[in-house]
Image (cartoon, rainbow, N blue to C red):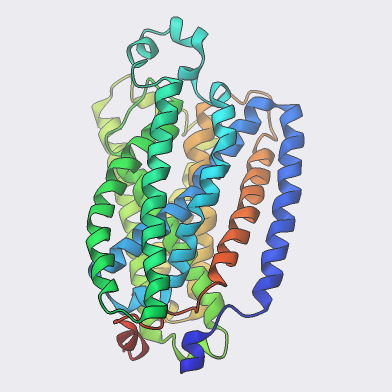
Length: 393
């Protein structure tokens, strides 16, 4: 059992890491080539990809803090995956640079000529302006990185010093950390996503944005754990009860995401306000209605029904398949959030740049994730909840 606890990712993950970097580099080259075809679409596709991978990195940090506050065996087996995912926020902070370079290609409020001729943009200028946007973005990343590196450094310290008091520090930081996440993600969702269409607003959107990150991160963490659980040593640690708990949590996030989506739709539609309804009209017409239908069926209905089954939740392969399917649907959801805001008349292959962008950034992101995952044992050796996790039934 000690071997299992101290085991690092198997050698096969070195190959996965190298291939991820290669695929990422090739796709980024294709994305850059696409910039010569359509510079506007290059930056928009980059925003889609960045939003998707940010959701996993930031969602991992939040789930990690939730686990510190609530405890439970489910969090112990995910802890190294969540820590490694949250550390990628440092790389994501660097990846944010192209968005800063392309502000005028992404946001109307960053175009001086558009602001002059739009009374609404003129009214929102004290908040939606480039210098203040940069200050806010820097503050968001500063908060997220501070939380990440405090928690991960204490985790490393716990492995070497065996200090039982470390757990108390985790909890003392995670409480305020959740409050800080709520504040920063509210404004980040407004700045980076909602302000794409500055005439539109939704009070539920920040909560939906945050819930989507939790769902994406949980699906990713489960998929990675199921891949690692197939190794002989870890197969002695991961019990069916762990899978059941993780499947239930994934089901909870699927239901919460659906609740937020339906709530926003019903409130906007029943309000029948001309400044709100166009957001949905753009997303349920012109071919986008088929994307919306796919999300209803494959993002909610199918995973909801599958995750109700106890047998599926206790089967590693099936649970991993559901998690990977949800990860794919999360990308489609982010794509559906952002791309309909822009005109695509006559551009039938614009989505190819979105695929190149998500694969390009994803290759780099996965390389960083595996690099961090290999630095420590797959299970926290001196975590007070480890014994409970090993005998969880």
